[in-house]
Length: 109
Image (tube, rainbow, N blue to C red; front, side, top):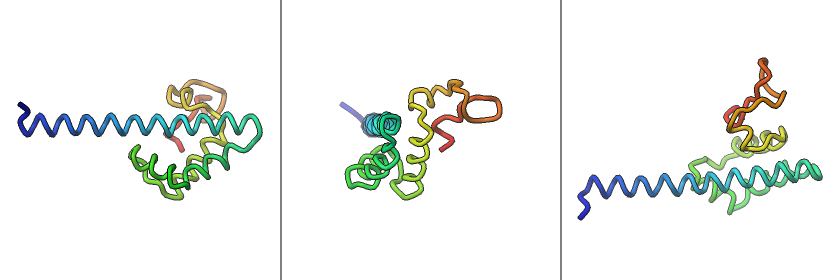
């Protein structure tokens, strides 16, 4: 059987997996908004509505992100930049961003 340390470790691991799953949902919402921004310019408003909605706040909370207005503004700014999350997380050079030409990435928001 499990002793207390094993049970705590297992529970913590499950929580981390759930948090990563919800973080993936946030990244997917950002990518959808970026695609919409490129198509018709409505992505910034779309991510703001989503992040302020009850479902959006719940997903952000489950991902370990505090759903406040500062977070919403950061998400809006990120979508406005138009850099896909996969590119931003890798930090690839897109000719945008800092003085060395590297993309500032997702963490700069």
